[in-house]
Image (cartoon, rainbow, N blue to C red; front, top):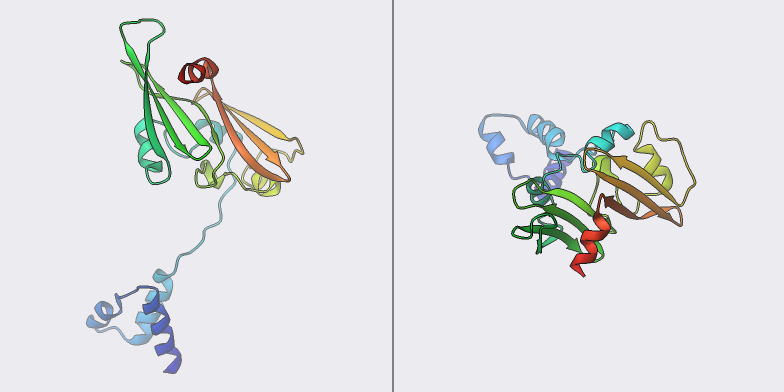
Length: 196
């Protein structure tokens, strides 16, 4: 009996106030405890390694649209907009969306009448994760465990092309950990230089 009441106290401390509700349905303390233990504590699932092809298709683990990206990272990254003259038609104004926090910056380019596409950027914060928990701060060993078909490599930087986004993802290692993730798309340098 002492163990059950201690367990219920611990469960209450985790904010699980549904005990009273479950008891009102006539469930015994032991049944309630089993239910709360099964559903009340978070379970850390292990990640399943992805293939390089899966990464290339969806590097961020979602369809990479401006709206999806903004909704997913709105609590992590700030957003800023820049308006630039369209290179082909000077009467049109295009928009560059910059998502940033500290030295992490990710840019999207949106022509006036077309969908926005990722332009490039640099990830230096572990809060910005790619598919399968790939992020800054992972050790080299942890990084290669995230991929099913990428053999271990001691290079200082590793690049993976993503035709779906039109970008290359370069993982830069320093002291055995990912220091930064560089994202480079077509014409990125020209467009970034125009922002300066």
